[in-house]
Length: 196
Image (cartoon, rainbow, N blue to C red):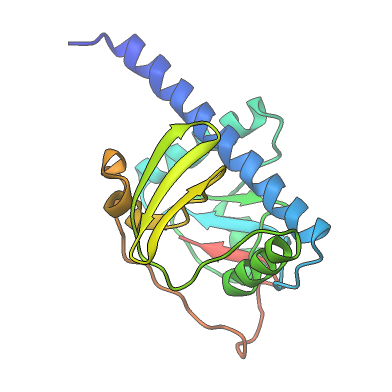
């Protein structure tokens, strides 16, 4: 069995890696939206995540401290502040990230595709990919239901279904999620995002 101290150090290292990747992805998303002038209803007015259990509340507290170590301003909001800002009663604290927010994913993807096509990217739809084999860092063989393609770069944008194309990534699995349309609802959050 592995000593607790070793496990703790490894989990902290993993958490730092994941947070660092998330921060770089957020910066890259914002840069692409800006550089390509993508109209995708981007609203970086802040994101409040509400804990709903004691253990999640503890995790939020640790996340705030980890964010500070990475130079990120993440605010810990007590129940009273959550009630004052949003008129929401909760039994636990929340974590507010200024500058985070929402965007319209379909509009964003359309904007990225449009920018890619303008820069010379070739897009093949609807083509089923059967296999991708990397021969080197600049040569990838792609077998499709329409034939064979050799490419310098391949973007795999299969999300939760990646494992069907790349079995070595079988730990990626689809999860159910919900989306709520709030376009016509009163915006009590003043453009900010609230999740739990």
